[in-house]
Length: 142
Image 1 (tube, one colour):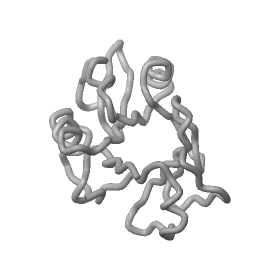
Image 2 (cartoon, one colour; image 1 turned 90 degrees about the horizontal axis):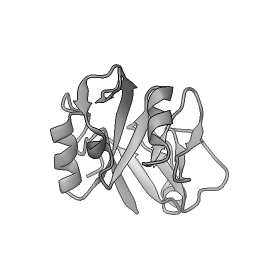
Image 3 (cartoon, one colour; image 1 turned 90 degrees about the vertical axis):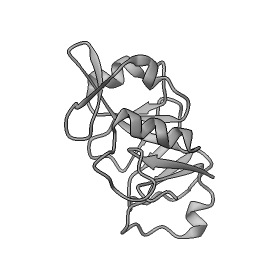
Image 4 (tube, one colour; image 1 turned 45 degrees about the vertical axis):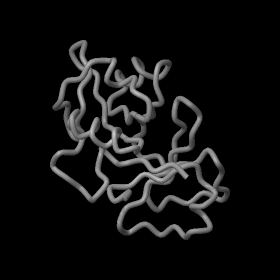
């Protein structure tokens, strides 16, 4: 099963999350990483609540990144080149590569080898549900 570090976090939430160097360090440690991406004023930025850290497209094309497009412009620019997804209030969404990204504590009736479950401290999944999935994403991935 693949382990995806939420915003680069492997040991819990951090004020370093979504910073490019933090993401690189996590990728170099062997984990995939979910990052929050914005496209504004003809540029790409990382950041959860707002665009904070400017990156170039080459950074976003690295293997192992799962791009959470935070605005529709980011999705439009990235969906043909990367593994990206966009959501608002959905229980689950498809990434541009066809993975089912399931948000914390959202239930589906059939977990498959294309599912990615986002796990938070209060998540209520059991091992039988998780073991059939492709990956888990968490702040405490280690």
